Image (cartoon, rainbow, N blue to C red; front, side):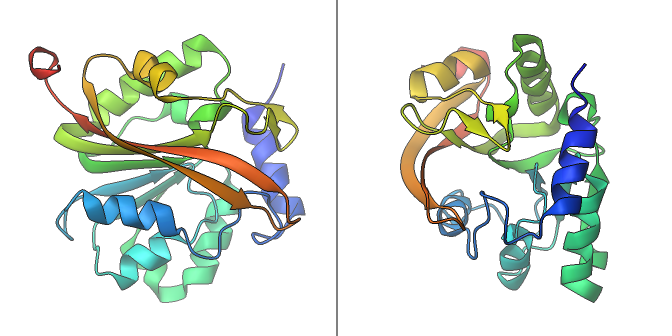
Length: 210
C-alpha cells in the first residue's frame, strides 16, 4: 500500500527546496490572486501542501499576520522553519495529511498550489472538499492550482489528475462560485515547462449559487 507520508518525507529529505520541480523563487501568480481577494491582513490564511514554498515569506513581508502552513512532510516544515528563522514563530505550522486534517480555526483564504491534483482517489477528493468546506468561512476565498489539461501526467513519480474549470467545479460542488481562472507555464529547475491552471473561487451558500 502506498505510504503518502513516507513518500513526501523522503522527497524533502533527499532534495533541497530549490531542486524540487515545483520550486518557485517568487510565487507571483499566487500573490496576485491573494491580493485580488482583498482579504484583510489579520484574517486567517492557510497554505495547504505548502512544503518549503516561500509564499509565506512574501505574505509576511506584505504584513499578513495570521498565517498557517500545512504539509504532510515533517522534513518540509522543518526546512521552512529553519529558512524563516525567528519569523517562523509567528506562523502556525501543521504536519498532517490533508485527508486527516481537522482545522483548528476558520480560515478566510485557503491556498493550494499542486496538492489537490495528487488526490487520484475519488474518496480522498471528497474528504478534501468536506474538509475545505468545514475550514473555510462563509464568503471565504479558495485559490487552487493544478496541472492543466495537456500538462504533465505525473509529478514526483506519482500519477496526478489534470483539471479545467468544468472538472474543478464538478469536484467542489455548489458551495463554490468560480471568480476567475488563470493559466501559467511553470519553468522547473530542470528548465522544463509545466502547464498549470489557477482557479479563484468564493464560498457561497448553495441557494445563492448561480
